[in-house]
Amino acid sequence: MVLLHVLFEHAVGYALLALKEVEEISLLQPQVEESVLNLGKFHNVVRLVAFCPFSSSQVALENANAVSEGVVHEDLRLLLETYLPSKKKKVLLGVGDPKIGAAIQEELGYNCQTGGVIAEILPCACPALLLGVRLHFHNLVKGLTDLSACKAQLGLGHSYSRAKVKFNVNRVDNMIIQSISLLDQLDKDINTFSMRVREWYGYHFPELVKIINDNATYCRLAQVIGNRRELNEEKLEKLEELTMDGAKAKAILDASRSSMGMDISAIDLINIESFSSRVVSLSEYRQSLHTYLRSKMSQVAPSLSALIGEAVGARLIAHAGSLTNLAKYPASTVQILGAEKALFRALKTRGNTPKYGLIFHSTFIGRAAAKNKGRISRYLANKCSIASRIDCFSEVPTSVFGEKLREQVEERLSFYETGEIPRKNLDVMKEAVVEAEEAAAEITRKLEKQEKKRLKKEKKRLAALALASSENSSSTPEECEEASEKPKKKKKKQKPQEVPQENGMEDPSTSFSRPKKKKSFSKEELMSSDPEETTGSPSLPKRKKSSPKEETVNNPEEAGNRSVSKKKRKFSKEEPVSSGPEEATTSKSSSKKKKKFRKEAQED
Image (cartoon, one colour):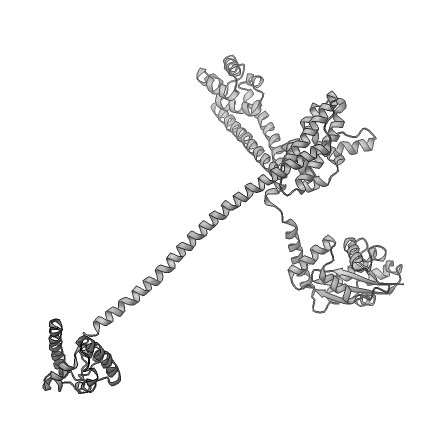
């Protein structure tokens, strides 16, 4: 009898299931496998002990990454320590992933098992109880529906995939794989099209095929020559430019005069020229693509490209699937990479296995003697494996190690030919490490300078934007203030010009503004004024009451200023109301007294 707890990882959380006491052999019976599909019978076998839901999608992604890497997350640790029985009892925890099982057993001390009964419960090889757990999981957990569980699985799958796909944009080997595949396809297409141009134009000028061997040059000459009967001394310079050889240009001119080819019509010649122009454009694009491939290889795999060349290194990466896969391969696999058919045919027929695959296109194997080709290919594959691992796992890509490894291959090749003893690998790698550190420091220094320049440009741009926004914001309130001041000034000018109303009464604003003109009068003048004039306005006797307080003032201007402040207070309290004709007489008398007061002040 086995008392078993099963850990089930789901997109919504961790579930801890308890398997009731059943025999291990009985789990393998077909009746038990059929009863798993029935929810009632499945509850008799498995029950839910605890369920720990994830609080957010970010937490779910962290737990998924931890499970895939074989790390015990804090949520899983808390669940197991809380709901599992004490360690003294015989607790057997079933886990589907061997990595997480080993981590739980090492950190928490629980006895974890991934084989035996667990192999029948969890792996998909015999999905009896696992099928039941997955099928009835939304029924085991309260509040969980089948639709919400499917949505959680879909969202977690997308986020997990996005997290795994994150990479450095400058070190993408997918572009290398596509570019080398396109380059090989272009070579085949250009070769096929060039042969078609040779056959087509050969009917008219068959001697040109023997003189010119290069396909792209042949197509360019077919464009320039056209009808061979029109070829003369004037086109000799163009022929020399294309062929880069004066003797060949002269031979083409002589062959056109004594050619055995057939005559060709104008429409046929136009079609040949258009097709040859397409072939020329394809060859030019092939050159630009090769330049692009060299630049990408110098960024992604500089050591491998320095050792074996850009084209061969790119073919190795494309055949392996990625630079990481190539770095995982041993040197024996790299040696025969690309010769799988020959290898399996040799194993089947019990013949000799191939000595090299794609690395045969490197110059080292071609330069070696026939008896040393296998030895140098094995040595070269070893160095290629080292270079690919350096390129894959180094933070700053440099070609120093590739150049040193190339020197080692050259020394080994000369050792096979002359017997000169090469340097030891340890000494070479020490030199390479020192040079690589210097190169990495130089690269980081350049990157820092570029980053500083970029930050300065960004600061200048932000400062310009901030200045422009501040100018716009400062101009708008000033305009608003000017617009608000203009109507105020107009109102002040309009106040003294207001006309009395029909009943002879004025607004309070006009009654305040007119008496203010009388504020500069001294008390002596008010006392010496005519009684008829003083009786004209009802507010003048009230002003005389406050006159004794200001008799001690010697300066008439100061007295006038003080009287103004006091009169303001009185006018604000009393608010006098006067009729139209009386106000007119008082205004005339006040203006005369004001003029007299100004003359006296000037004389004093």
